Image (cartoon, rainbow over all chains, first blue to last red; front, side):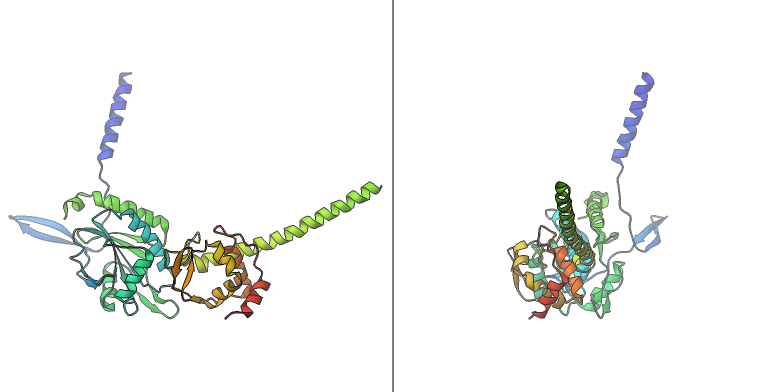
Length: 215
Length: 138
């Protein structure tokens, strides 16, 4: 009997430990080891790849930079409004993400158009209205084509290609960026299961100490 | 003897009727399942797995009244695409559906699938029907 109680206590303690275990997401991209001398001691630190500075205009005509997104976890994707192939399915799935975090202040969504010539601010605003999104949760960003294409590379997605039939070919990835602008996950935006995982991962990320302390 | 003959004739008639009916049903299933395959590869990205469309951007395929009213134009919509304002399911849509280079039989199959899924029930749309409708495209 005593042994049994002992075993039960051990199992309970073990479970309690597991309960406190923090789940964290991996950090993607290139990393560098930087060795510095701090107070006479040699300290090696890991520097992770981050999303570089950018400047675009959203569907309201407001200027949006990397600074505007400071203090936010965000999901990014690339699309264009006249896209006949994967965009509708991507944004049907992104709507699920939008609705899941509608009332969460520090989670945002940005969609970069890869066809700025057609997708003017007015076109993007109309698209947003038709899609049924409002407020400042989900921004549709427009800017110089080269800037958008260059930025795509830093999100570790392939650069969009011009295609005769489909107009543009691009990845359907949703990329999760943390408050330190590091890439924390990539999800196929055309697969509902992957999008469910993204929603779970955003919750996990939000609970990480790094994310709760960053403003 | 008489009884046997009569019951025999009745039985034959029953088999005949039954097989006739199942021929129709067979045709329907053939159209429907082939249409399902086409739907998945050509229509589903935009119109959705359950024909739900996308907000006010892409119309749903769940408005049975719209489909019934426009039954004779559906073939033309698929073949030549659709542009301009349309109103259904209490929303106005003004996007553009691209044209599709489908054979009449493929149009018939996908139409049979769509008009008998997502809460619609319009029966088989034959390739003969599609052929006739395509003659009248504006």
